[in-house]
Amino acid sequence: MCNTQSSLTLNETDEAQMSWCSDCQCYSLVYRSSCASFNRAELAQFQRVLDQLTIDKFCYDFLGQPYVILHSSRAYVGFCLSQQDVSALKRLIREALTIHEVYQLIQS
Ligand SMILES: [Zn+2]
Image (cartoon, rainbow, N blue to C red; front, side, top):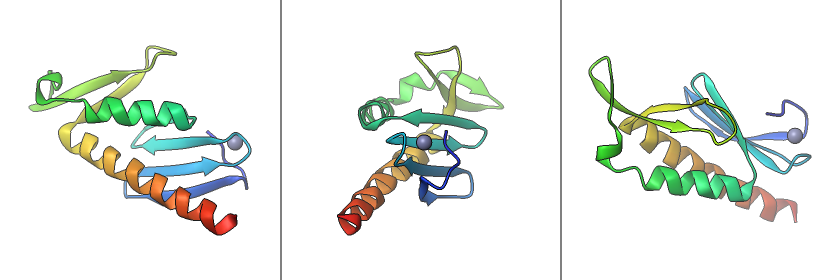
């Protein structure tokens, strides 16, 4: 996570934000109280994981709603997501990458 002048907010909603740091060359994702940083390849992998979440993967019942838990490979910390959360994240990342491409075109 970077909070410097090199960090560019790509898009945000009431509970999420995607940003790009030109120093670290990484994307930062804040979703509710969770945050993660990805390089381009790692973000693509995260998108694939989200895309492959079928209904049967949402097997944790919290407050009567089905959730999936995505674990980090680096530590036993993860995202706990409902189906609505996954849809919101997929849209957020897709839009952020489009905005980043436009930003890079404008800069070049
Ligand atoms: Zn940085």
